[in-house]
Length: 232
Image (cartoon, rainbow, N blue to C red; front, side):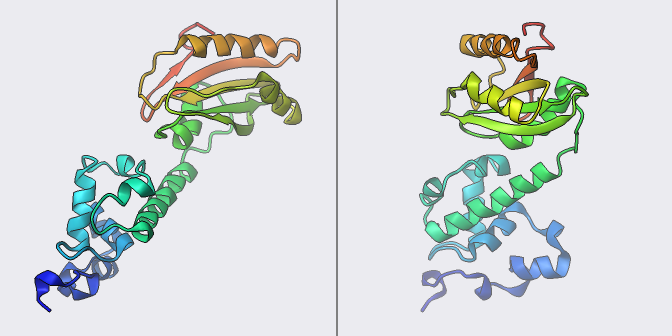
């Protein structure tokens, strides 16, 4: 069988070009993004190596790992040579990377500013393609008792039930809360529904003596704070 008709598996490459061997000899930092992805998928297709295929996949997302991490199994399977098993390997590998980033986030237990809130929640919701609504439950020293996902929505919104919000507040013995949700669009401008929900939740906590300290809109790299902008 000719070389052009055979599958370009990692085992068939010149040893100097093998990502696995390169990682063992030179260390993980010596590998390019495409070489790391090639290790995840193992082999390419009949026309290109795993590295070449990985480069093509990366090029489709402007070589942005964060953007690659947003692709679904189905979207990855649109690339020739990427079946379900390989797509799952890519998704799983990038999800582990995301979780590692979350663990490495600053261990802020006391909230002193809106930036603290952003540092805590950005690893969780900053790069999602759908909206999620989270709440930080705090004690009277502004230390985090619990961070809780309240609802998951689509690309343009999510529904929040005040009864659920304050049920957890009572369960955690919280004296204050901070709201946060992401905008997949990247916009930091609060919508009218964002403002209305903020006021609704603020008033709902008055009778329970649970104070609403802030509401953040979070994107991948920035945030908007209702408290900082004095519209709480």
